[in-house]
Image (tube, rainbow over all chains, first blue to last red; front, side, top):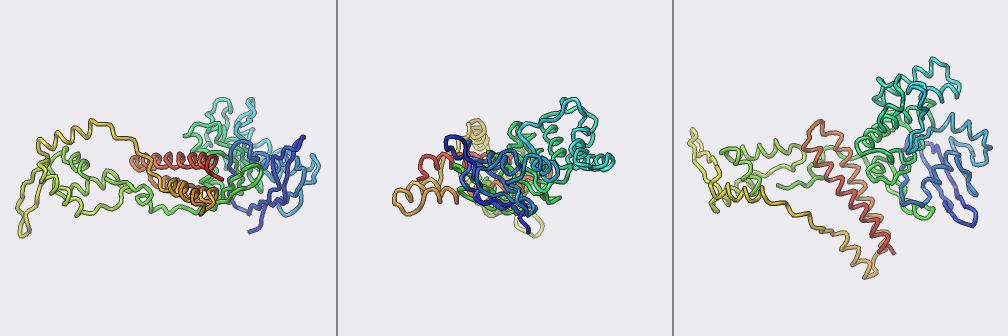
Length: 241
Length: 168
């Protein structure tokens, strides 16, 4: 497997010497699902923002798809974000006066897809995310879980190399959070989507292939998770009567 | 297994094998395989204590089949079990004992112990989540898995506290 993202000594310091990120070395392989966890202020969102070009490192390197991007100008980053990355945030940031379909197709059209191709991709995505029947609805009428699924469809329309998600379930009740996790799991398990996801929710992190636990701007510990053995319910439950 | 058997018998007389089947049916995939011997041992203790009675039913060419039923005393005992709140699970945590003692003796890095424990809980949470995908509408199994997952999430949060206070 080729790494899609590699960072070397990635550092972000703020005025006055506050170090949000203290020289991180991370490698994310193609098709991998990596969760980043840790207490508030540990640097996990800073890491994600640097990977997405939403913030600039003060030192260190970022490789995306085999080439250095850390020195890119804002204009080049804008192209990278549009063509190669998908973003999902805690809040959905959908455009209220566009339909669900238009919200999803818009970044595709901006990236140069034909109207027909954008429509086909949007149809497939909404269908696979279980919201095919909502194409003509206004996002303002949808539940939080449905809006987040629309936001995920929008993030996937340009078939990004990496989906970057910052607390995607943070604003949702537990049932909606479950729906959104099912959608992300499917994108990863069925379609091999590479995902880097920041979360404080252990249940969400437990879906990843690898969990990076951050403390004070550094990766303190790394956990590799194995697919569960589905036959082991009773062993896990240890129910006694 | 005393009270579960009494509770099953509240639905009517049954023989041992029927009780085993009823338990398996109620709890499905979440219940470990039940040892029939354990059922019969429990039934004979219940009988000794006067909580169940049995009738022997003759069978062709085989030993008599014993059909068990609740006695009045058994019904009263069961009533008490049903009426009383179940005590909250006590925190019996082998890991915590290990952490406190290993730290005091200086024989392990507490942060490493906690990290390893977090790995194990995360992996267990993952397995529960994978298993939850396979319950196919079995509400009892789904509810129990949910309970187990919530406990694990609490365990993980507690590890965070342990790390803050005992992690070095």
